[in-house]
Length: 128
Ligand code: HEM
Image (cartoon, rainbow, N blue to C red):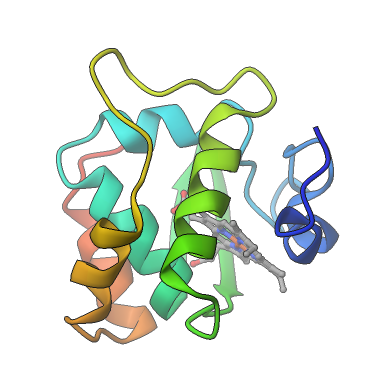
């Protein structure tokens, strides 16, 4: 399903959500494991609002890049983007989780972070 909002992501994460191994991490098959982690929803909102910088490992492959911040988007747009990447390419919300709301985005916008602090938040999720 095409999404005008996701158009600004697909140059890196690719239309298929598969990313580019070692350069841009995949979103397909990966967002659900972030959603399932305690603090995962908040982390995903933080990545969009504040970016992410530093080394991460996704499914055994290392990435050391820069995810740009998209704070210029409206709360509703960030919620819509996160709902898009949570439900495309076979991705699904974990049982019992509802779609992202603008109110959830607003709550994270009230707590500014650096991209390096977003990495620290990621490190606490306990992702494999
Ligand atoms: C990381 C989504 C645009 C490059 C991430 C992550 C998400 C995400 C959820 C975190 C993955 C994880 O922690 O495992 C999006 C969305 C975008 C977007 C929804 C559009 C609004 C872009 C663009 C680029 C990019 C345009 C390239 C210029 C990266 C990189 C990382 C990343 C390099 C890993 C950062 C690191 O190594 O620390 N993205 N992204 N993203 N994204 Fe994006």
